[in-house]
Amino acid sequence: MTASWTLDSLDLTQLDRFASRLALILRRGDVVTLSGPLGAGKTTLARSLIERISGDSEVPSPTFALVQRYDTPRFPLAHCDLYRLQPGEIEELGLDDALGEGALIVEWPERAADWLPADRLDIALEETAEPNRRSLFLTGRGIWRERLERLRALCEFIEGTPYADAVAHYLQGDASTRSYARFDLPHRTAILMNAPRQADGPPIKDGKPYSALVHLAEDVTPFVAIAHELRNQGVEAPAVYAFDLDQGFLLLEDLGDRVFGIEIAAGSAMADLYGAAVDVLLTLAQEPPPTLLTIDSHAPYQLQSYDEEAMLIEASLLIDWFWPALHGKPTPEAEREEFLALWRPLLAAAAKADTGWTLRDFHSPNLMWLAERDGIGRVGVLDFQDALIGPKAYDLVSLLQDARLDVPESLEAALLDRYCSARAAQNQHFSSDDFRSLYATLGAQRNSKILGIFSRLAKRDGKLGYLAHIPRVAHYLERDLSHPDLAELRRWYARELPASAALPPLAL
Image (cartoon, rainbow, N blue to C red; front, top):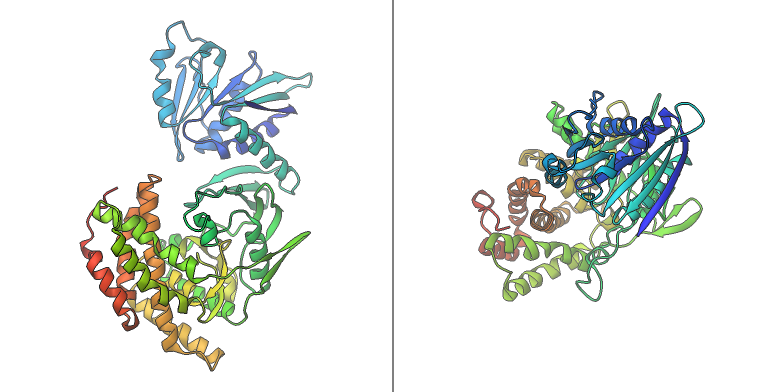
């Protein structure tokens, strides 16, 4: 199966813009072939691709060396010019090894036809009657059939926005399947979110997959709706300039690069940044979110509730992934049932307590410092598509027990006091004691979930970097379990899991 796409009469600027868009979707294991007669522009396109992936504007021709290798920030890249390839030389080039490590751009691919993999993107270039213009004929083979169609949809989406003439720059994404790019024009930029709808995973309970059970966003619709409502409430969510709900493309306001973690590493006071973020949550606590959120020219989006079952399934990631990784065997059924029985009454109460906005990912990787703005506008909020109506304490836990940064216990206590004092001033019925109990319960639930997620990312997806955060998260969990209302739960954890200071290597 193949897919085809023709781009007629591109000048050199348009060719470079196309290369910047193609570079966004390239990954390890990809082969892109460039064919056409001498002078057709193969090397010009190859250089543009390499520059966009590597960030290096000095790209030598590989004509005499046949293969030129580049260590780029994303993956190793090899540029092959096979024009002078002699019979029998293909095996000496080490292309299989290069492909196993990274991606290949191959000029004169017809000279290595027997070697070429079935899954590849072929680009044929032709000169046109106009000087310095080329036509491109793209063919996606194998897995590249759908990827070429996606690339075409992305380009067509951008063409319908004010950023049609912008050059794209790849941005490192998060742990999700979303990808991001910055589109640059003179004097302004925008961020592209590329988030194709995710197919449901296998059913795990009542015929439903995990994403449905815990109410995770499966397309970009919630992001558009929630961003609009947050901005109505004075929160600096990025403005949505353009969107395609069916394809999963969003063009967003660029809030910059000053993520909380980078700012703190550069010397900004954690207390100042986190204090400003607490003020955002206090603002959101004043008014309940509407159940129906509007989207221009589309049906409204219904905000769901963070129910007991969703919280329990999330907490159970600890016994699904972390417990087995610690002990090197599946969790015994008796321990599983005891774990669930201890959690059910706690989460049933939590799901109904002090409810309002629950953004669910309100922590340092998703918070931007906008120092030039005022008040709560100094905090940009990036990731909220999984937001629900749920206990307000959840987002405060996400912030003050940050899985990616060490939050000193003294700072956590001071900001928790500040939050409770402000809430009590807002509402005479607010109980600080009840809120602190809820905070500890949701902290234990969230940190149990995160231990499970980080173990899953390491074992199932090979993303071992997340293991470095596990001791921090386990330490937060111990803080939460020290609350008197969690005494029975604390005994289960003390029996089944070692203290954070004594965590052994996980059996992955």
